[in-house]
Image (cartoon, rainbow, N blue to C red; front, side):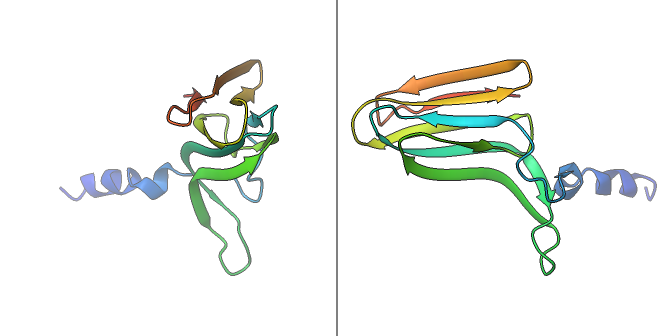
Length: 122
């Protein structure tokens, strides 16, 4: 019975997190396009990562990235796996999301505020 305890402890959620240090934006690229200046909301999910935040909070964790904006925007996620959704929240035209990692790119677009564009790599 006692031999099974270390196995259970290693399967905890904290054990499943990937340490990325202070390199929180070294994964796949994301890009939101809104050629006519539409407003949007982006939500990306990925496996949990821990990272160095500050001298006082040396080990923080995240598994979600959110941003709102108008017009184009881009950035990077911490890993090369995950998925993103973008919702049109106002303005004219469509909004699109693209994710890229080495050798692969996926993209989707929407004009419907009720139906997000969705892309991902798992």
